[in-house]
Image (cartoon, rainbow, N blue to C red; front, side, top):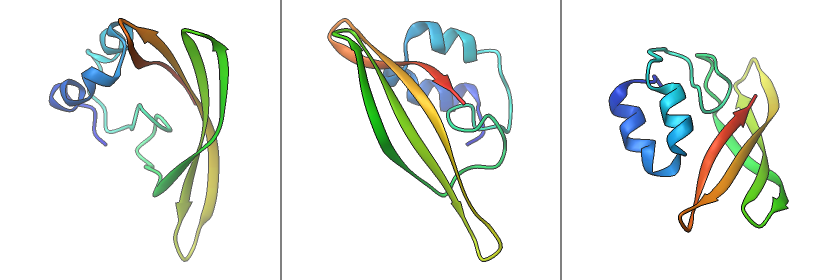
Length: 94
């Protein structure tokens, strides 16, 4: 997904204000929400969830690419925090 102001606005309700601010000035073809590259995964699944505290969890997400020529997977971590009663994505570690 190309990161544009419109795309970021559509996802803003799922992200912390700090993450939104850090992404606002980026205009890129890279998928900043998964691999930070233009090579977008074909599928994903949640592999694990670690409860760090009552206000913070870390999800391990497995990304998949599959074609006739390629079969690959990669793990990323997504840190979420509870803010004003809502769980929001605060950090993506890829």
